[in-house]
Image 1 (cartoon, rainbow over the protein chains, first blue to last red):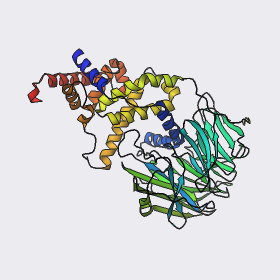
Image 2 (cartoon, chains in turn blue, cyan):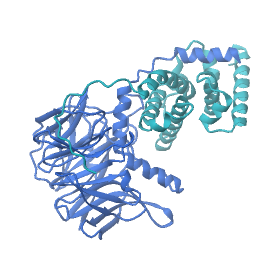
Image 3 (cartoon, rainbow over the protein chains, first blue to last red):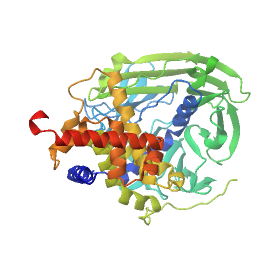
Image 4 (cartoon, rainbow over the protein chains, first blue to last red):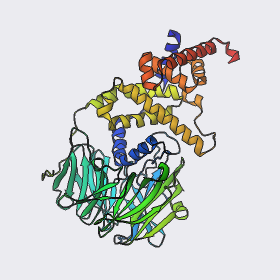
Length: 352
Length: 174
């Protein structure tokens, strides 16, 4: 076998260098942690012999052209951000649709139109930005070496930039006054005005049984965490000022939630996720639960967001317009032509 | 439960190299080359290595306790790449722009071996790569690929026989 050994080694040695970096692995890992709930759902469903469910990589939108138009500040509840899941045309690293020096965000308006807002710098392969109730954005920017928490106005201008401590911080959620950050040491509440921080959960044994997704409304934060058994659909509600948990809401049983959303007044919790129905058949559902009582107010089976093929971008959005109306929308557009999403958008409106 | 600290954020300092960093530095090149030879596709191997290393990073507390973390990363990368190819085939007809097997090795030292290796089924190539490039024993190869030892031996034997047959054929027959 020695002759073949040597030949195979020669082939391997003659390959071009990998050109990979640990920084890229860490960035991917950060993005992945945010989606760990989705992965666990897939594993759960696979274990039950159900059809595999995959959740493609999510990135903040995308494209340098056509030139997006910054939208005016809008009161909360009048637009829904559409995130994008992009599939590179080929799997070569560096082919993700990163814009040069800026990021365009799609916003679904209540009249069905799509507007574009521009952030003044390119985001990494994550969706680490949060649309604040006052129309601004809180963003985790780690494109310049160290990580920084940035607040950008609706006009696209940077209002705040604050370096962050801790290894591999993740922006979990934000409200008008606070951002919720997670890193290897735990979860911290960050006061946007003063920069003071409060640890609301510490890491144990190097692992983080901590919130993986969160959305904040007013002074409340809905979080899914590993320790809160996401398979049984439990969502913790936390006060973003004190950091204390004020309640836990169950959205049912045998499900995996990919996104919990509190209504603007904090009285209702909408969740989107995969639920195991009859005969363990996985169903993609939107369910709205009353926070105070746990009563299910609305329960609808909806299609899964469309998946992008190589060279395409899949958009998805889910949000409240006001205390009674919410919308789930998705669509696919060719990479480089984000405006196509207008024609291809599928939209589902619910009244509660 | 709530520990409270008020602290002023400070710029991040460069942390000392950790265990994963050391593992990454030692393994990434070898895993990438093993995947590239197995998949016969350099670009896909890069992405598969990145993906597998990301998963290793996320689960490092468990992966680091394995006998052969590098083998685990190879297996994860191989599975991911196989799945990716399957997905591509399902979502669009086999197109000319899909990387052709031979395209990855234009500049290899031995085109004949490359061609013979490319002609092997990917399962056999994976076994050859584990034994030759990752220096794994039959037992370790079986563990890494999730195969019975007998299957590893038979695949290796078939692969070597095919490679020898291919390489001893007169050039004009190839």
